[in-house]
Length: 154
Image 1 (cartoon, rainbow, N blue to C red):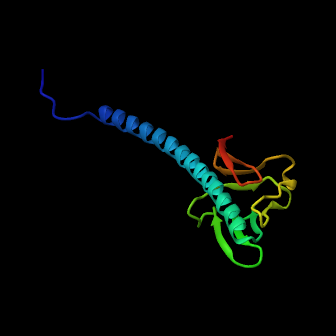
Image 2 (image 1 turned 120 degrees about the horizontal axis):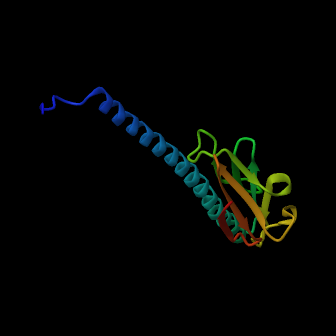
Image 3 (image 1 turned 60 degrees about the horizontal axis):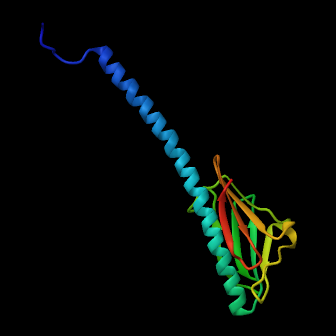
């Protein structure tokens, strides 16, 4: 038997094919993970923002409004008589990138009155809902008139 002088071309091609398939599968799963984590983080953030909006309305005795702009994937929470508390943007320039944002209420607006109770009349039921989607991953936030929320994967 002759001592080996290195790898043959066939052996190198097999290794490269295996490495390419492994990288492609890893990239696919990583992309799904990023989509899922982005949608979940945005939904959790919205749930926390509802609590802040409700608490601000109750403490300041002023109406606080949550305005969704689904076309540009953002929402703004503001005191009705002026100040913007904060704005969340989920477009390509935002901290979290989503493919869609949907407040499933008429008018795409939610308001907490001066007692901290939300008007869910446009929701069509006792709970309001908002859906945050990134790629194939989608999370739904269900919330009541007191701003308490629950995040579920859809």
